Image (cartoon, rainbow, N blue to C red):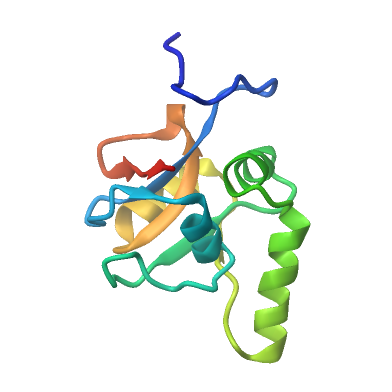
Length: 132
């Protein structure tokens, strides 16, 4: 197996990658920008295109790994931010999907979409976004 760059080995398996719809022009994001988009505080890609965020259930191990390792927050902190926006009427929660296969389909068919997947789920309909 090929090493996954600067990513440290994960006991449960491989790294979880940030992915986007093929039409997204942004190639890399900072952790802060990625966190702002997933927290639904920033609703667009850096180029101004509307961002559509997809996430797995909070108790999904892939969701937990992505949020902790890539966003450096805990799943319950993200959920709290979403709940606050929904209940105050200032925003909405991201679209939730049941599993990685559904995540792949939704990102591949939704312009401006972003989410996360393990490497084995990638195909040529989506792209990996690098994170600084």
